[in-house]
Structure formats: C-alpha cells, structure tokens
Length: 220
Image 1 (cartoon, rainbow, N blue to C red):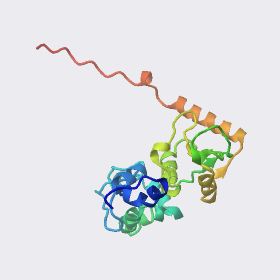
Image 2: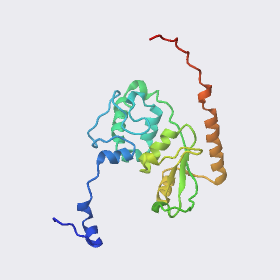
Image 3: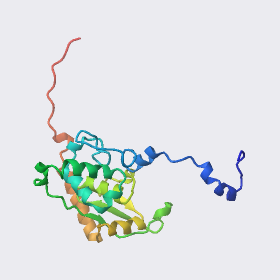
Image 4: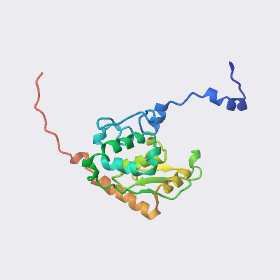
C-alpha cells in the first residue's frame, strides 16, 4: 500500500503496519535488566549479574541470600533473565560440596500492600483505585525483584521517600496478594512509616563522616 488511509477505521486496521517493531533492548531496560536472548547465555563466577539491584556485579560478589531467595520463588522461572541465574546456582552452588552444607539461612522478608483507595487521577489504570507495595527496611533489593520479576513493574516506578513503595493498580494488587504479599491496615501502615523514619535517622549523615586529612599545599 503506497498511500495510507486517513479514516480512523482504516487507521486501526493499518496499525500493525504503521507501528515500528519493539526494540527488545529498550523493553528489557524498562524491566530493569539487560537484554540477551533466552536460553543461550551461560554464567560463571566472573560473569556479570544480568538483572535486579545487583546487576553488573560479578556473580561471585552477589549476596548468596539474595540469589537463593529469588530462585526459591515460583515466579522467578518466568522472569526473562533468571533461568541463566538458576543454571548458575545449580552448577556452582548446589553442586559444590563446600557450599552444599554451608548455605546461609534464607531471609524471610514480607511484602505489604495497603487497601485500594480511589483518588482523582487521569491515569487510566488507577481509575478504580490504587495501593502501595512496600517492605521493611533492609529488604529493598528483594522488593525490587518481587516488583519487577513477579509483578512485571518497571524499575522506574519505584518511589523513594518517607515510605518507599510501588503503586499498584487493582489487578496488580490482587496478583501481589496471590503471590504472598500481606494486606495491612492503616495503623500498621503508620507503624511501617515510623520504622522507615527510624531507619533514615540511624543512617550516618554527611556531617558525621570523618573529615579527610588536608594535603599539603603544592607550589606550581
């Protein structure tokens, strides 16, 4: 077809031909991981972690608790880059006699969602209400893995602040509860906010850091 039609009905029929194909590298970046074709990448201890908050680190430097926890979740096998990590754990961790019996205890973090609330917005997916997905301090990397790998959220949707969280539409809210997130009441939500505030206060401030020694003046 050399000339595109102008009517809306014909434009809808021609949408496939008008739309450029998706860039897989860009789509993977939105999901918070690097792009590679499924099933052809083999990781070793000196390879780079392909996804998650530890992306870019050497595999031997990624916390083992994190790897084992994500790998134990049923949704991890559907996370595009994770099968390569699962294969790495089978070859270098679970098959190694030195690590078979000395595996660290898996952490048991809990993810929380509050009740759906309606609020004025022009965002279509939030018309029927939204909720917050968050965790207790210290488990942020697992929260990102759960949000990106299980709920298919974009890493850019994370909102740091008084209570770091992801916004959930009703369908994602239901899916998060199905995967093990805990529904909390308003009084518990306030307690979690106070826990985060105490966590922020306990972190060292810039003024508390030691002052580096001053180098002697150098004449030019």
